[in-house]
Length: 293
Image (cartoon, rainbow, N blue to C red; front, side, top):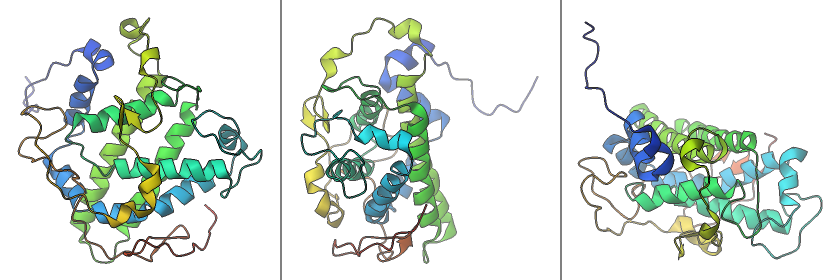
C-alpha cells in the first residue's frame, strides 16, 4: 500500500461544481492552496499593484487594438455606453476611453476583499457577461481572446513585481504566486461559461432575470469607473466585519478587512512597464513613452 498520501482524500460533489458557485470556489481554493499566506502576500502588495493599474490598462488596450479580430468588438454598441463610436478605434477613441475606465475599475476590484463571497460572485459575473448573458445589449467575446488578455495582465504584473528594487525575493515570489492564483480562478470563472462540461446539470437554466447594469451585482454598484482617476490615492484600510466561520472565501485564521491588499510598500512610482510610466504617489501619471508590445 502506498504511503505517499499525507492527507485523506476529499470528496467533491461534481454536480455542485456546476450548480453552486460557493462549492466551486471552495474547491479551487483548496486545490490551489489559496490561503492565509496568499492573502498576507496580497495585503503586502496592494499599493504597488494599484500603482501599476494605469500602465496595465494602456498596455492591454494597445494589444487589443493591434489585431482586427479583437479590435472589432469595440465598433459595436454592445454595452451601456451611449457616446460616439469610432469605426476604426484607437487608444484615444471615446469608446476605448470608456472601456479603459471599466478595466481600471475591474483591476481595482481585484484589490478588494477575496475573503468575501461577493468578490468571487463578481468575478463570475464578469465571465457570464462576456458570453452575452446578463446584458441588455448582448456581447460575446470568444474565449481565446479572454485567455490571452488575462495572460498579458499576469505577465505585466509578474515582471513588474519581480523587478522591484527593494523587496526581498521571497516576498516577490509570494506576491506573484498569490496574484497568479487569483487570475487563474478568474480564468476558470470565465471558462465555466464557455465550456460544455456539466451541461447535464445546467441545461434549461434561464439566466435572463440576472440582467443588470455594468458594474452592478445583485442591484448594488460594485464598480465605479467615474472615481478611478483618484482611486489609487486611497488606501482601503477600514475594517469590515469578518464573515462567519467556514465561509468559502476566508482561510482559517485570517481576519477579513475592507481591502486585503492594503499596506503595500510604495516606491515604484516612475518606473517603466513596457514603456508605460507607473503612477506617482500624488496620483498623477507621467506621459508614457510608448513602446511596442
